Length: 176
Length: 272
Image (cartoon, rainbow over the protein chains, first blue to last red):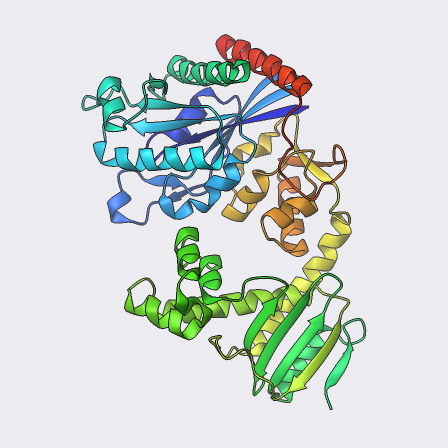
C-alpha cells in the first residue's frame, strides 16, 4: 500500500479542519481543545496538534490529509508535518484581514521547510465581509503565478477544486 | 572510596534509595550501552541531571519544557550569556520572557524527566563520586527523591510490560487498511500526533523515536496505545533501515511513477 501526504495549513480559525472534514472519507481524527485565550475566543475549540483525514484511491494508494494547528505556540509540529508531503494548501479566512499577515508568514515558513508546490485557498468566500480573491492576492503580496483559489470549506465541490489545482501544480512541476 | 558497580547488580531504584537515605552529596555517573548520564545530589536531594549528547543549556531546557519557542532558543544560544545559565536566566527574567518560577519549574521538569529515563536502564557502569558538584554555570534545583523513586518504579514495571508487548523496535508501522469503527472516538495528544506523522512502512519505531527524541519507553507506550485504538499495525520495514528518515532524490523511474500517481489522484478527486 502506497501512501501520499498533503498538508493543509493556515492561521487559527481559517477553516483547515472543516476543509479536511468535507473531503475525508473517514471521520477526521482531530485534536481539539477548548480555547483558553480571550483573544482567540472566536470559536469554542481549536486544533492542538493536527487533523488527519483520508481518501482511499484504490487498494494500493491512499491520500492522507494533515491539518496543522493554527495557533503559533504549536508551530513545532509544522516541520514534522511537512516531512515528505507532496504539496500543501494554505487556508486564509477571507473575511478576517487581521489574519492575512499571519497567513503570509505561515506560507513562507512552509516554503522554507519543503520546496513543494502549494496553492492558497481564499476561504469563507460566502461570508458577507469576505475580501475578493483579487484583493486578497494584493494583500498577501502573492506572485501572479501562485494559484489563489476561491473556497468555501463546507462545499465539497469547492474543496475538490482546491485539491485538484494543487495536484495540477504538482504535475506541472514534475513535467517541468 | 567511590561507590562503583553495574546496574545489573544494583538498580537505579536502589541507587537513588541509597543516596536519599544516606543524604549523600556528590555526582553519580552511569555509562550505559549507548549513552552516558550524570546526576548530582546535595544532601540526598537531586539537583542536576544530564543524559547523552543533549544540550544541557538553559535555553534548550526551557525550549524542551515549552517555555521558549525554537526560534527564541536558537537566538539565545548565539548570545554571550548563553554559556552561563545564571546569566541567561537573569537576562530572560529582566526581559520579561519568563519568570523565575517558570525557569525553576522548567529545570525541575527536565531533571525529573532525565531521572525517569534512567529507571529503564538495566545495564551500565555507575560511579558515585562524593562531594563533587555539577558544572558551576548550571542552575540547580533541589528535588526530593521519594516521589521520583515511587514514580520511577511504576514506570519500570510499565516498561517491562510494554517490552513484552512490543519487543522489537526495529519493526515499522502502517495505518490500518480499513479504518476501525473505534477510530471515530480517537482523541490523540501532541506526543501521539508526533509519532503518527512519521508512520510509514519505511520508518522503524526506533527511527520514529529518534526523530522525536523519545525514549524506548515513550515510543512503546504511544505505539501500544495506537495499536489498541486500531489506528496502526506493526509491519516489517520496507528496505534497509538507513538511520535517516529523509528520502534520497528520486530517480527518473521514480519520477515517472510519481507522475502516474498524481494522475491517478487527480482522477480520484474528480470522481469524489
